[in-house]
Amino acid sequence: MRLLIIICVNLFCLCYEAEGEIFTSIGQMTDLIYTEKELVQSLKEYIKAEESKLAAVKSWANKLDVLTRASTSDPEGFLAHPVNAYKLMKRLNTEWSELESLVLQDPSDGFIANMSVHRQFFPGEEDEKGAAKALMRLQDTYKLDSESFSKGKLPGVRYNALLTVDDCYDMGKTAYGENDYYHAVLWMQQALRQMDAGEEAKTPKADILDYLSYSVYQMGDLPRAIELTRRLVAIDPTHERAGSNLRYFERLLSKELRENNGNEVEKASERPIQLGTYERPRDYLPEREIYEALCRGEGIQMTPQRQSRLFCRYHDGNRNPRLLLKPMKEEDEWDSPHIVRYLEALSDEEIEKIKELAKPKLARATVRDPKTGILTVAHYRVSKSAWLEGEDDPVIERVNQRIEDVTGLTVETAELLQVANYGVGGQYEPHYDFSRKDEPDAFKRLGTGNRVATYLNYMSDVEAGGATVFPDFGAAIWPRKGTAVFWYNLFRSGEGDYRTRHAACPVLVGSKWVSNKWIHERGQEFRRPCGLTEVD
Image (cartoon, rainbow, N blue to C red; front, side, top):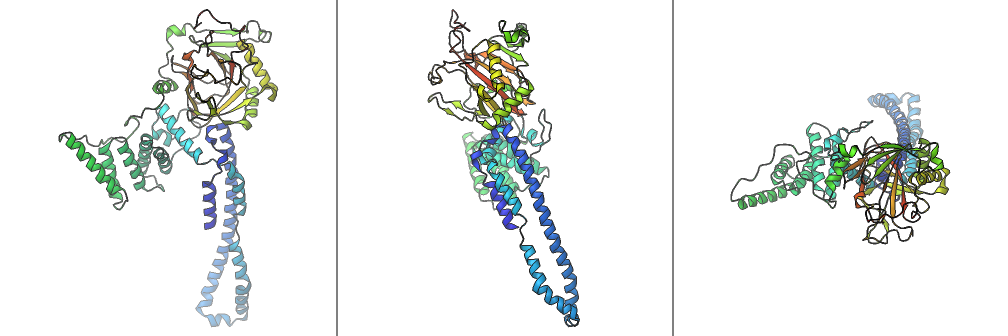
């Protein structure tokens, strides 16, 4: 049994990492649900076999216990009966050997074999870390405290899911390992809060206080760091770091007192640590606050005056024969730059076929390095994507033709249809679809010019989060299954419209599927002629 436990732990720890980045696609993660179900069934069968084996052994033990109590009370008298003498010889010569064989049987073989088959598809350490970071990203974007996640208090959820003390502790350790003390504090504090409320855990309270006190110190809150470290010393006076940390923190506090000319340093706050207690460190993204506010539906610049300029209409693609009998329903989403949404752009059957074709091809989505032009993965784009050609299936050919009919632009020079599925906290931070002047060779190998327009199909509803936002002018467009949005990235002059910098907000609850077509300049000369000015 001990060997079985060691083997199982090793199998779970040594996850096959070639299938890494599973967390970036909910579509691929669903396969793991069925894998886990099969493993649970296999585990139940193993338990049943072990219980059957144990029941047989216990039956033997109980029977022999009664027998040996009688035999040891009067050994000679017991053996005076010739049948007892015979059965003793038989038991020790035959039956105990049979019992030994039974004990040595290993019912775990089937379970271990099943584990070995499936472990190559298990998520790895990077997946677990990526999923933890995704929760923190959602926490920041949607201003959710750790308790909201821990208690499963999320908008639009259909299934309840709770985080234990040990889960919160592991979240905090992940942040700590990345020197992200801001999130380490939030999650270690939540672990401590749940433990103080009486929840049992494998993690010692001393370990939580150790990480929490040092993370609080790193956030510049020296009085609270001292208070937490004193609490740690009280719990575990022999802790290897607590004593030295406490002396170090107290020396720093004394130094602050001297530098303040003896004025009393602010005491540790009695209020518990929560979201907003400490300021989140700023990062590389200048429009971070605007972007995240739009994701929450805040700061949208939809004024009554702008609203009055938005209309809906039937669009026949300048009397395109394929749209005359069934014109496309078109709605204005924004006036300038002009963004439109097409209703009933994809049927449910088409969506399912596209997803079916894309799933086997899904790979971590990439971005183009502006300096080298080489495609590479980036932490600010968390999703998986696949590229589908018209030859893959008549549905793809039909969708491509529909895009050409609706937009009036040729798709002969467009990129393949890209299908993307967003995973845990899936997002694509603010970016431009077109290449800027500082990256002139971005699409050189294609020989089709810059990306003149973007056509984006929403292939799923999203319970919470997942909006497409434009920080420059304060627009937010929410996913609606079967609809598509369209905008131009370039002015008629070929100059980039820098207002179209946009982002895919993190998915808070749900699975977001989209497909998009990037339409290029070549072939549009007579379909979208140049204007008279640079910004026409």
